[in-house]
Length: 68
Image 1 (cartoon, rainbow, N blue to C red):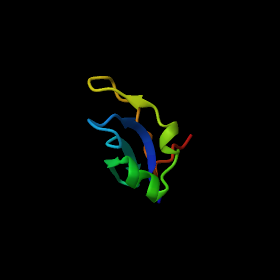
Image 2: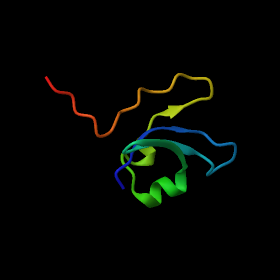
Image 3: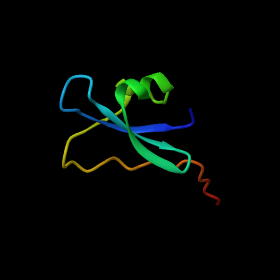
Image 4: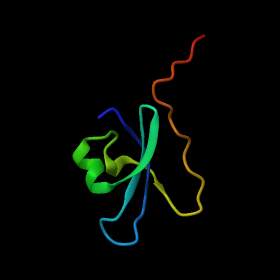
């Protein structure tokens, strides 16, 4: 997969956690199990946690190249 995980959020029950992913021109939340099975990077366990109401980490745009 080309997607890059940005952060993870706690679910209401064990195993219900999600990750926010940028994948080319789209961004979406995906369940932990599916994130792991699709092989997104960085590994789920290395994503920063974001709590409800907390500011989200800056998203890393994919496919954009800055020119100097």
